[in-house]
Length: 544
Image (cartoon, rainbow, N blue to C red; front, side, top):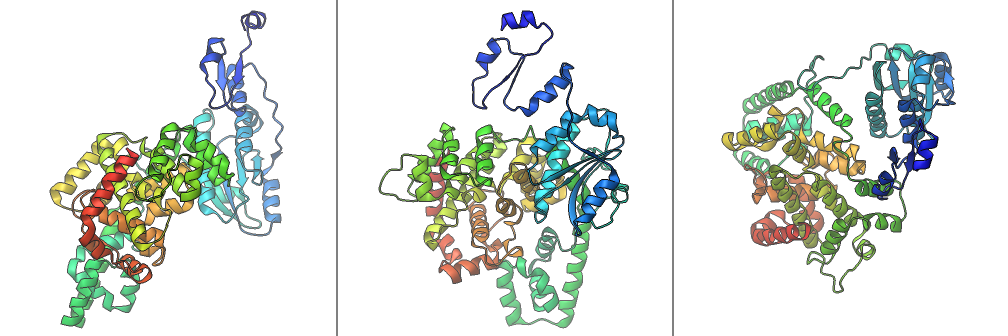
């Protein structure tokens, strides 16, 4: 290396190594750059001005792109990035960036570099709106970090129809970086049909809420939010009777509460906050092994390949084996390998434990430790209910990560979170309501965004987003209702913040387990609460 450096005094040395290779040996040799991706080299060399980038991607005019898209003769979802300047000098200057974006796309996606405009991506999978949004967010975050002398005016997913104009579709789209606490956009409020709005309005009406279930139109709106508490009150009202005037007055009060609650929430602020999360990919990225596990799973990699990836992390391997050999499953023979554990428990369970351990290790503040106990309590109760109902819902990951948004706040916005918890305890209100009124975004939306950034399966994202009101999604989704039941029992046992009882359980969750599996969740909780606590302590030991 010394002889080479003396001979080529202006050259830069770059070593390309495997991801898990020890970098120390290379740095001792005097290597200038050590990378694990070939795609990084172009950027390094461009910055060092020692390399002239050979740009060979085709460049289209706006009209040519419009003609190509129109020739497909159907509505298309396209991702559009428009800059204030984007002619040949800018294209050549950022050629390495454009080629990096192109190389990172799926082979079936189509990439257009458009002169005097920017670039356009036509995703192959047009049936995945969320996937297209994730693609937009990732590319947008990458572009933001790399460009300096040109301004990104538009970064949007838009619908392109035959003979549409790209200029007209994007001319009203303005792009700007904004601070979440200084939002200059017009405030947008929540829909009156938003689940949180309806849930809070029913809670505010208290016993009066039961009357709404005697009106056919209102029942359709509020029925998915029926709790055991309201169900008991409905029986009382039915036996006692009520007047038409009482019903009309209740309907008016409900409509007014829905309006006030929906207008009290700043949805624009929430959206901007979530957009900023998307940009913090480095801060919020998973460790390499865990990221590879998810990638292999999402790409339907072979069983053995996923197992090999898991085995690279000794801590995860140890916890999986402790989990598999615990009394929760009661196997007669000891399970000695991850591969054997995956065979007897199923890959879903193994992935659940490995990813749960990974993400929980990222959150290590005192406040997150309490939330960790609640998450583990939810998992232990879900396993307990599974045994009683004789089912295997494979919800280990969902049980634990449903609280991920709360953990984010507890770690990264600790001051605001402490004030939030202080208010919960002082004013004796439920956590969700206090959060709704004081934090920039609902923790369910924060968790959903994190699950997207980490490429968790979509159904896990839906669990995070909807576990609190499962019947809004489905009255028959066993996995979702099991997580709801387990979380509510954990809260009723005191593993979360105060204010919860099993009366808050969704009626259709109770109904599903009673009619389909013969398990009375109320009786189970009443008669076996201490046994559940014992199971929770056991699970905490296993995953500690």
